[in-house]
Image 1 (tube, one colour):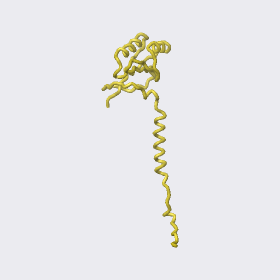
Image 2: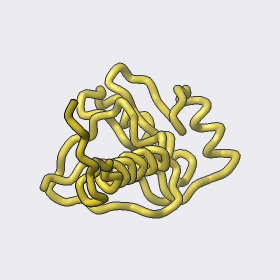
Image 3: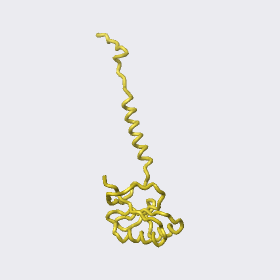
Amino acid sequence: MRRRRRLSYDERAYIDVVPLVDTLLAVFLFLAVLAFQSPITFLAVKLPFAKEGERSSLSIFRVQVFPDGRYGLEGKDISLQDIESRIRENPPKIILIEADEDAPHKFVVALMDLAKRNRVEDVLIGVRKRR
């Protein structure tokens, strides 16, 4: 029988946990970024492109117009009459209309007319900026 040679400390197998920790840290960072995303960013509205546009950080009344003519407010479907009653309860200075590029024009005009009737100071149209 052959005698087993004893391994020295340097020759023993070991598991390096540094790459594992780095990978887990990257996964946690990715999940943290996803967790703090606003649910409004996942709307089904596809904004049209424009050469000029700017980001807005004001507190404004945001209304979405979907391609089938539905209106959305805070992620929920809402009727034009309900939008008007909300504007009358708490009149905003600015309304941002985020209309899908395929939404019929008459629904956007109806919303703009509603804003004008209720004396809203500014009506903005949301677009995506070309890069």
